[in-house]
Image 1: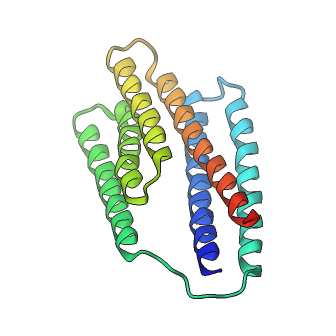
Image 2 (image 1 turned 90 degrees about the vertical axis):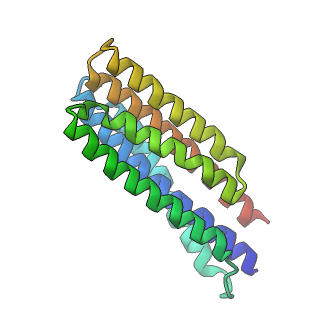
Length: 189
């Protein structure tokens, strides 16, 4: 029973994070679209976010109905997770400051997406999740395309950043849907 509670807890934590990050990416996309999308992106991802919240509440309710047991966590994986997150946060902070100082702040969303995409690679190894490699590759590739389009000035950087944010929101949405699927499987077991 402790294993089920631990797996459900991990899935719920992941789903909460994907809800938050989908919200952030969708808000950023709407900011960069500046209403040129007629708020369609906000509406679509708003529906996704409500769906995620529903399952967060469902999994929380199911988790509280499970008999209480001592959780079995791997402290080594936990420590590695927090180290990766700290490095990611530091890299984002440094990237933002460097870009401001060199006058290339329009590249921040591409840098952010690149850092986020790359952080999935060690997480895939730490948690032995193949899916993280796919999400990491998709997000990293999207960031590289964003860099190229902005640096070559093919399009207005706001539109490139908007589409890059949508691409990242798709990543977090796919990850959230995977978490929901995992949660359903855990509860069915």
